[in-house]
Length: 367
Image (cartoon, rainbow, N blue to C red; front, side):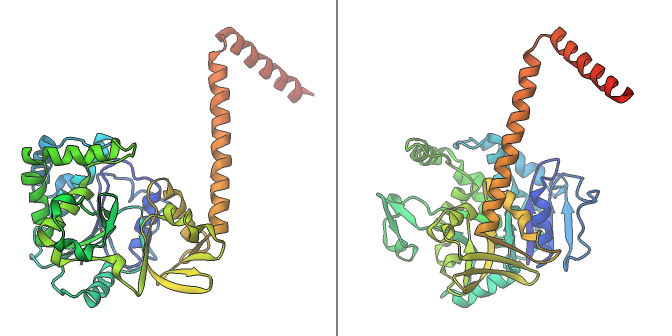
């Protein structure tokens, strides 16, 4: 399976090194990024990784620039997220399509979020899904919530029997998506020819207003486009990872952390060299992975704090981590406040204080 991740920033954020080190313990990773600092980072060692990291500048992918330009000419940011972020989410699909032009239509491709730590290879995830699915011709596998209409949740099993126009598209989570090459190709074409077409404007604006009109953040993203496309075109060939009985997935670590289970003290997540395990009150379940979305990215490095290969996250460890971050932030704010206060003083006053400090230091050194 072709496994990939995308980041268009010129400098690699620190948390991505945890992502790369973790992913290459389970599979080869194709990492699309223009950043040049990965190979020169002396803190980053992949010598113990079982698999390869293949880095590629997306700008050099076949005809990627042309597809990207087509999209940029159409894109309207119907979202509270910054424009550059919304574009990047869509760009990754065109980069992924450009990188896989030699694959056959039935070959599987996996796109991972860079803040998702997998606990098994995506090929193993797909195998579990195929064993559990009624339809073995799966075109798309992901993690999503139920569709809601008129304030009620509707199980996805009965969606084919409900008038679609009265339902909001299901919310697909971005942390792990597995699809065939033909699904990926057609989804990219759908974005350009249908999703941002004039006829869809009322739908997109309406979806956006459902968010901001209710005081919520969000709006249209690549995930809402993916939800619409998969439901309209491939509903019978999709599989929700949440339907796996034998495996678990933590789709948002902070949601888990502040849930009733997370508030308890009797859980831990083991990050081992051969996989992840969620233990709750002495009972354990194998994890597909953990998504450290948003500000939860600061927890990713904790998975490796115990040793070179294994780590653990527990309630106590996370509480201590948050306390350390709070103290660090308080100190940073204090130093910033002092700097602002000093900058606001007259220049002659600052020079006098500097001379006083230097004079005092000279007296102490000559004693």
